[in-house]
Length: 226
Image 1 (cartoon, helix red, strand yellow):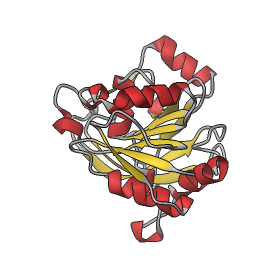
Image 2: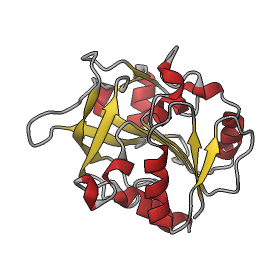
Image 3: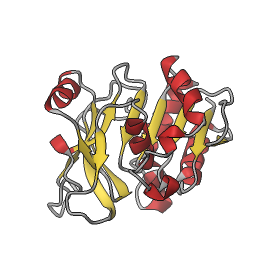
Image 4: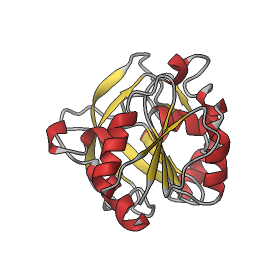
């Protein structure tokens, strides 16, 4: 599997994501600058976390207009698996590639801690390495992570098994960290080939990170796309 990580001004998890993907695939990861207009041959597109353009206007709004997004839209239309993590999730919603929006955290504070979440479905390239119902612990670092969508969209996501991850209470009783509706931590597109999630699995992919609950995502992707 060949993966490509998109880099924007203000990205700060791009290298972490590239390392996690390279470890899983055994191959170097393409780093693609946001001003490029074409993607290299790739089996997976990954949009990393960070603060693209300093989160001006709205988080992800300016990045969604970057030149590379045209090539990403074409790749998504062809069915190339695409994952957006944290700021990447925000970019995917701003670009209209996933429904809903990421709003300011309910507590109006930046959240940086490890959260517990439940894997809601294993029926996607991104979650096939987990069992539905499995609990994993993954770090978050965000200020605008409150997932919002209208009632019809929320119902469609639930009815179509497109909620990939959901926040649950951890061992200290702390649950949803940002006020996301339905405790949503990650969602899938209609064809299940695009994933947006706020927690950072690339920062829980090695024992040195404190836990490796995120590794199964990258290993599962490597297996299905190899």
